[in-house]
Each structure stands twice: as C-alpha cells, then as structure tokens.
Image 1 (tube, rainbow, N blue to C red):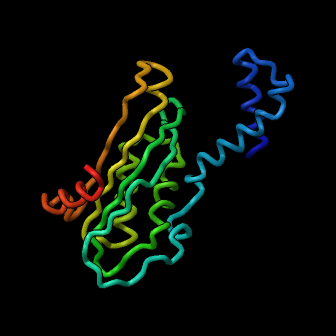
Image 2 (image 1 turned 120 degrees about the horizontal axis):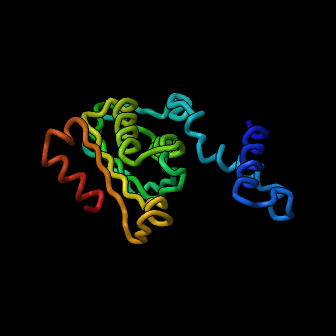
Amino acid sequence: MIDEMSGLYRQLLGQLGEDPDREGLVDTPKRAAKAMQFLTQGYRQDIQSLINDAVFSSDNDEMVVVRDIELYSMCEHHMLPFVGKCHIGYLPDGKVLGLSKFARIVDMFARRLQIQENLTKQIANCVEEVTGARGVGVIVESKHMCMMMRGVEKQNSSMTTSVMTGQFRESSATRSEFMRLAGY
C-alpha cells in the first residue's frame, strides 16, 4: 500500500510542476504516503479491539464528563486538516468505560476523511453503544484549514457541533448540567 501511494504522491508532485527527483523531494512521496496512512488509520481500526474489555461494572449513575480531548481530522471535501477538541458526557447504567478509551474512540473516528457533523454523531453513537448509557452528550469544536487556508480565508472562525442522545436529549436539566460541566 505504501509503495502504491508513494507512486501517486510522486505523480502529484510532477503535476504540481515540481521535480520529484530534486534533493528535498526524493523521499517526500514515501513520507507523505506514511503520513496519510497514519492520518487515516481509523479505517483500519475496530471498536472491540480498541475498547479491549475496558467496560467495567459500576453502581455510579451520575454524569461522567471527559473534557478537552484534542482531535485532528481531515475534511473529506478538501483533504485539509481540521483540529479541535471534544467533550463527552454520559449517564452510566451499570457500566463505565475506561478513561483513555474516550480519547481512543475520538481518534478512531477522527482519523478518517470526515465532516465534523458526522464525527460528532459517530462518537456519541459509539459511546452509547459501548456503555449502554442512559444518554450521551458530545460537543466538538474545531478550526478548519479548508476555511482558513483557502476559500474565504477566515482565520478566527471555528465550528461547534453537538449531539445529545437519551436523557441528554429528553431532559433540559441533564443537557444544562452537561453544558455547564463542559464549559458552556
């Protein structure tokens, strides 16, 4: 896969008007292919391996919030990065998830060609499915290079998306508690 992708990057450099054989670019196609493979590793991950049995019984039924999980993804429209953070809250129903697994879930879905709206929903659905929670809230805030580096070139713009399920959707008190704990 790396060799095929390297050949495509080499062709791209030529199409851009570069000389792929010049000193600074000789190894660029291979480096770019490896970087792209890393940046899209979410396609090659599955949730069961990622969670690795880190769902534990608990009698806690109060809200759990994990804030400021950094994320790096690539816009599916322009293949340019968007970077930001994710806040996740859930109401356990007999099971809690190991803390590091929230970051792994975010990374699994972020490391794909994505739009932020779908990313937010995928994270919420996954946390709900894995934990059996009574409700999940997810907020993602990001800055999109496709809006900053090209097109309208707005450097201070950001996008915020949210998905609420179960009690987070049905109860304004639950939603408000999550928003407050998430810093909104």
